[in-house]
Image (cartoon, rainbow over all chains, first blue to last red):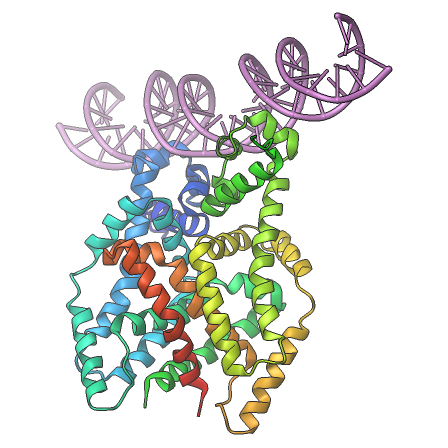
Length: 204
Length: 204
DNA sequence: TGCCTGATTAATCAATTGATTAAATCATTT
DNA sequence: AAATGATTTAATCAATTGATTAATCAGGCA
């Protein structure tokens, strides 16, 4: 009772894997075809060009990343500290599941800043998100709850602390000789540790 | 009175630029030859293969990064807070001058973990550096000066906060629409801001 | 000067890769 | 069953790229 396979979906799954792992240039249509268990001509039959396939994957990846933080930042039922804890926890989990996404995005932006920059902008709803969070920080600062910091800096610091360790995981792995399981435990620990680190830093 | 040009040095400079910008696979020997104002055959005449050239550039980049932090961490005349301020300042400066190095290294480790992992290890003197810093943290914790944190976590956080913004500069640039001069000013500001952020976080 | 060694060049090779084509196969409808 | 349109395949093309080769050039030395 095998369901007839969905070739398009197989291709997208294969493309996601191959593109995220290797980047646009190093990914080959033949690799994607193999991964999807079809041949090269079929791949071009379903998605006319490498560019087509690629932008589909890129938009999806960037959308996932952006939506996650935007959604939390603009939630007006959460206080600053709750937001920090949730973002840190969700991002660290996300990057454990999708370890190649941050490098993938950074790499492609560097390769083609104008074109990729455009695509990122269309994914972004023009930042009421940012305004909400920024006001919230200002408010808490005026109440004497936290030190002065710009929303920009705080968000950049949060993302830095979540993304970079995921990005550099293979480097740390190689240099430290830790096992996969040990790395996993450290990463799990970091959900609390990083949130505490950030909160301790801004709380007066 | 033109000094006769040093072709080897021209090649190394060209290779550094092209490899760091594009990574191993996307960099072409023809690009390097053009950048060095020689032709392809000359390039192979001086450095037999692309691999040869590449590892020279990789070792240099990784060595620079590592030596910088190792040197400061193992200096026993500096207290923890001084170390943090110096590392943050020097790394932020360094990544402004060499914006492609972090991505370059991460990318190549992912491309070829075993081979590149080996090369990184030979650049590293087996970490008395790390021991010194670790002891120092433990000591300050016992004196009640700082909160408990592992040397590993603290170093990872410091590096994350210095490297990631440099890495993601092109993304931020595209999304924010800030000018080069504004980005430069923010980066300069961050030297103090990031050091404060870290120190506030660990100081009791 | 004439030779010799190292530097330089143009041409070419083989492998890889995105893309296309034309033929073959399959499924659905009449 | 025949026909029609969608799917699948193998073969091929042109461009790119790392590497090599053979020929040429430059300049120091006998």
